[in-house]
Image (cartoon, rainbow over the protein chains, first blue to last red):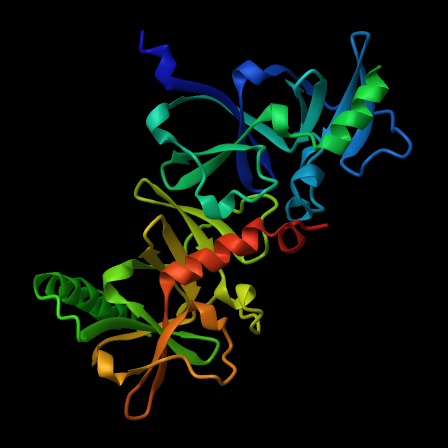
Length: 158
Length: 179
């Protein structure tokens, strides 16, 4: 067995054409799209809630959360999934376009983003991972929600 | 510009870079000249790492529009900036003459999109004038000086200041958070 400490295990997925990842330890499960109950007066990025085996789980549209530039019209609903993650004291589902694969990444391919792409609001950006010629953006599930979203969703979940 | 010519210039870049390291004459400046929004700019050759064709850029969410994203160049992740957008110049589609100029600053490597790579020149520091009072298209803070040759005016950029300016732009929330 290789040294587990130096391996980052993640699930890669797509938003539009861009490749993202979340660490496996942060993911509870990945499910197909199911009926979402909208919540009135919620932030734009909050699609609503689902009933997941008796638990109420808020659903975040990750594209909307991360920026409008990622939103395109030709979404394939068949491929869309909800990734249920631990968002810091709160369980949420993130809608993604297409789940790709589980990757074992050696630490040497992981990089802290350059200062010029780490703005004040970029804490959800955990790192960048080099893959051949492309780059995968690793997200921090605990920091995906904005303060505002976090407070509102906590109230909903009770 | 023909690919061959570009290669020739790039070879020149490497060559002159070796020269520059060999005999560092403080009075002679070697510059790589490029075109941006119909004006000629230049950066010191010693700062230029390489010039590449435009390649796939991975956009980073929630960055200001002048940050195009990041690219992976042989194992280095480098942010890429659009100076036209940074300095609110007229926008232009990328075409076959567009190039990505990768340069190093003291703290990081950065990539900037230029309209066209022109040539590389040697000039004496006496040919460089301080930044004039007249209005320039890009922020004066980012300019090292202006070189006046026979029939060319070349604006020499200060990459350190440019990098600072970009960092400021990103860390000023009003400018960076998109609706």
